Image 1 (cartoon, rainbow, N blue to C red):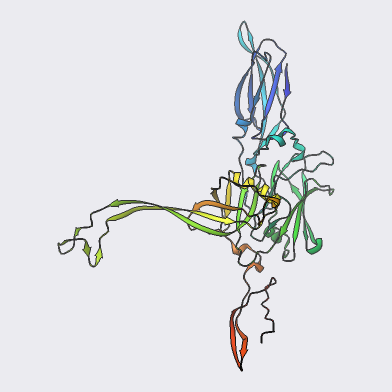
Image 2: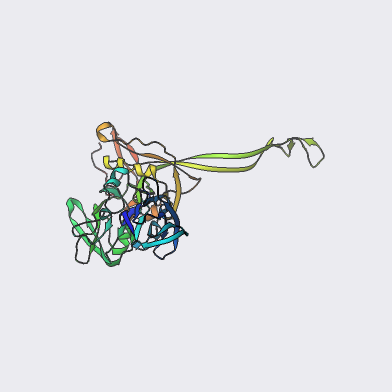
Length: 444
């Protein structure tokens, strides 16, 4: 008989230990033949787990090195409000057979097959994993529990009309879900409450919570919105996830946002807006040296033909790459801690002007995690990205119409007057926060 002494949670981060420990009550046990099977019974890997002198009837294995290679990050940019990033998760089970030593050689003993387990593409730090309970990250039938979305992004982080914001979540047993969106104005005034009902969630799902997606889905103007919330509920109105809150803003006309999306430690994708993109170009040229003297059409051996001096060096190939520096708006303490994940992320994308998500490499290798109590200035993060030259990093067209600069008139008004002669003041009038260009009387 085979006894499973230790097994992982039903859902486990793939890059954390996925340990199975087994034992046999047959003293003739030599090793266990273990097949790791997918839910369709296809073989992921076959292993031989031998007993050891200090554990003569048992063995163990850590499957994280194998299972972490069959899952991957998956950024889904589709028109769907809910989608299924299937590459993020893998179902598996173990088929274990005793291999017994007898006088006739090695023979099969008992065979057992475990229930299904799941891994998803995530990694918790050792302290968090030491107290890991999958009920904290997976929607289950446990009464009174709510699952965390697969993100550590702080609440009230700012988003705008160009932000692509997605929430990922794991689901074990919720068939019919309700996704609740609530929009608030000043002083927490509820502007509108909207919901998508009858949603069928997969084992892992991605929910679009971008301002533009919400505006398009529910045909609502977000101009008066100051913040909004997102939460998953069941058909009885019970909360099944934690509440995520976003601060909505319309950027100033001179602040073109650069939207960066990056894979986080929990398997989802987070987004953050940077500003003021600055490009520097690195050029590599392949050249050859040549003799500037050649024969012209008249048969003269010369280095000048028709008034043009012949080159001494020819460029036969030229390649260029660019590095783009962008900087954040002032950060909160929570944001500075969370943005460590951007610097550490293995997959980073920048949203181009045509809405294409383009993969880039963050070249920052050091990130001081600042806190307000240790700083006398505003805390900002500047990152540098390597990408092809000439890509357009901003997308003005996707922003709220109020984003576009207002029509600023060029005017002449009376300025300083002296001895019946007035010197005019002329130029552009700076609009106020509402886009109004107001000229105040009072010059004399």
